[in-house]
Structures are given as structure tokens and as C-alpha cells.
Picture (tube, rainbow, N blue to C red):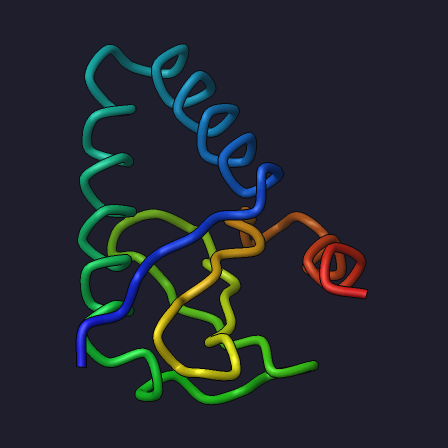
Length: 101
């Protein structure tokens, strides 16, 4: 089954802020970060149920090489994956909890 993809606006902001930070650390690192995020999202879309539910129907995936968590859920019809947050591992993960309340 092919899944559609949606983002909370805050999740898009999460990615943009991370890309800016990585670019400031080293030119080109933001591209590697973007690629890692795109790759894990492709995996999520192929088989979103492979990730276990962690809280409130939210599942969490981890991209390779970067310390981030992608929080997402599958809508009731199971045709859309909704990304609620893309959060650094050291940041309070409850930020995603608040977004889905």
C-alpha cells in the first residue's frame, strides 16, 4: 500500500532549524542531514507499521548518523503518515506529546 505524507508545520520548522544549525557547523553537513531524513521518511512510507507505537499512537523512527527522532502516526484509514516532530535526541521528547494533544 502506498502511503501519503503530511507534516505538522512545527515538524517542518524542526527540520529547517536543524539544517541551519548543521550548515553553521560545517558547510555541506545540512545536505547530509537532509538526505538522512529523506531516507528514513522513505522507509517509514514503505512500511510504517514496522515501527512500534510509543505513546498516543505515535511511532518513532531514527535516521542514520544523526541524533534525531522522527515522531509520526498513521491516520485512521492507514493511507497517510503524519510527521508530528523531528526532534534532537537531547531535546525534551515531550514536545511531540504537546503537538498531538
